[in-house]
Length: 151
Image 1 (cartoon, rainbow, N blue to C red):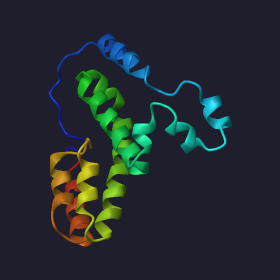
Image 2: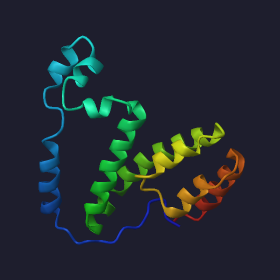
Image 3: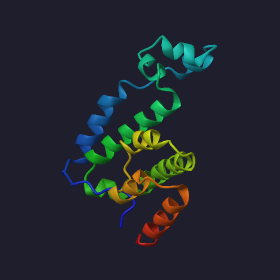
């Protein structure tokens, strides 16, 4: 069993991915000094094209956006690049596991779990465990059983 989901290798060359990332980079924050020197960072971001992130999304929305970008990048990588960056993606998905476990502990948070798993790179088996309508203990036991099968 794999911790990360398997994605077909599209065979895109590394240069292709780098140029796509460069193009997406244009929407990133450039002038951090201006942001950090502004009195209220949230107010400053509301006056920029980041308003979309700030209205109604909050920290969870920003986290989901990071997951979406990470999933996009992972899907664009060829198998050689995925193997190189596998430790990073595993590390980032450990955060997803932690958040889902916290939501699972607080009963009735299945909608939040589903939102987090929407862009997650976790394997379908692990996602299925979190989607099961059960308490935290059965989820932990099922995860432990699956993790024992990891290479």
